[in-house]
Length: 206
Image 1 (cartoon, rainbow, N blue to C red):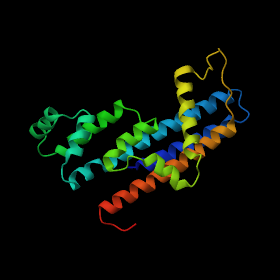
Image 2: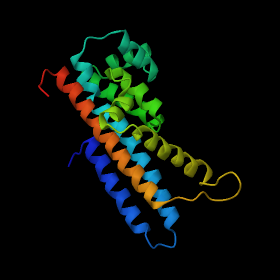
Image 3: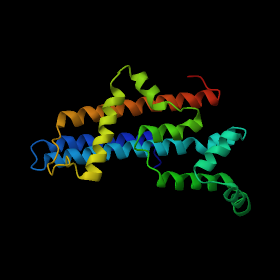
Image 4: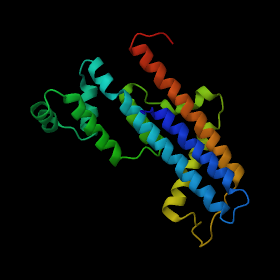
């Protein structure tokens, strides 16, 4: 059964909550918490890429080609050679081929930083989607909280969470729970912003 990007994100967040719950009383409590952090940030990466891809072909079909499209295709590595190839090799299904080229680009470029996400969503006229999602929450520290989670993920993945002095950094369950709640709120607000943006484009009411 097909699922949406948001449904998949929510499913992964349930897995993260389960990991945090299992960490209590475990002899490897800290590493379970670290695994939850890495999984949660991967969920953000997956959501940002998949949610963008969901709207890609409908948006291409709907809009008149512009310089913005040319710039975006250049950014994702689709030059005139590739476009001509699409028209020649798959003239009956050009959008399917363009979607494949987008998927290839997204598979090579992670969305595990705010700047990468906003750079991608600029194509949809949402260059400040992270800031807007944080503002929508009414919590001034939301971006900082999720930012700390992204930083910690990098330290875990690239340095095995060592502090540079051959000692593991402490990781607290309450912090991980707080980060996960913050990430859920951020993505909930991103989803509302994206949904509303395309409702307006389609001429639907909010």
